[in-house]
Amino acid sequence: MTDISVVVPVLNEEKAILPLLVHLKGLGMEIVVSDGGSRDRTRALAESMADRVVVGSPGRSRQMNLGAKAASGGILFFVHADSFPPPSAPDVIRRTLAGPGVAAGAFRLRIETRRLGLRLIHRLANFRAKAFKLPYGDQGLFLTRRVFDAVGGFTDLPLMEDVDLVRRVKALGRVIIARESMTTSARRWERDGILATTLRNQRRLLRFFLGSPARRLARDYPDVR
Image (cartoon, rainbow, N blue to C red; front, side, top):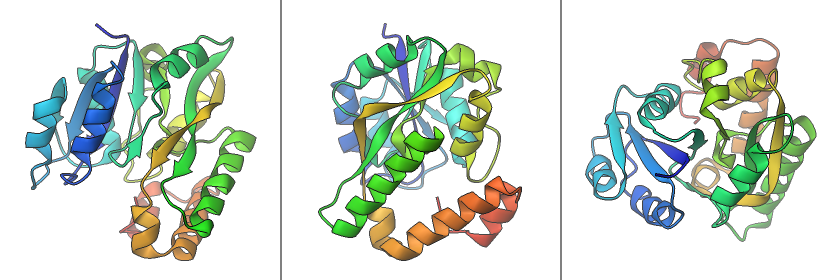
């Protein structure tokens, strides 16, 4: 029985889920897929590879809380369906969380692309994460179950649930950004445009920190996740 459970929230991810699960299978962690009611083959594919598949209402925060509840590991590692952890992820996670005063951690971000604009984006994202200790969900957040339970898990928010969790976890200890990288798909930027996506994400983050409710942001940015 592994001490790390990786929780993957999914919704209609039949094109992405199988390669990710094959990759995760080789890392020796328990795999829990939390499906939000997919209408494609996502659930069937997940059941063929994952250790556990749970189904609930859509919403990434709800799905990750449900997956965490079903997981058996003492360490929880939250991974998006389009993001791949490095091969050394289990060792990095254990070593990072064993550090003095550490409450949580995440990886550096690497966008899977050769486009110069996107390479600049992930460099800026890594600077922001390191300078402000504020990683996003696509960087693979990890923390012990004890810390996760102590902060009450993810707040039921339609977006910004990762930022909200990290802000609360900081009250319990340090948040560490590992040197190793999570590789994430460029699909969001390619679909909506590099500049438009980046500016929209930064406006959303700024408004959240200025006190704009997440539900209001979700109405203003209905297609952003």
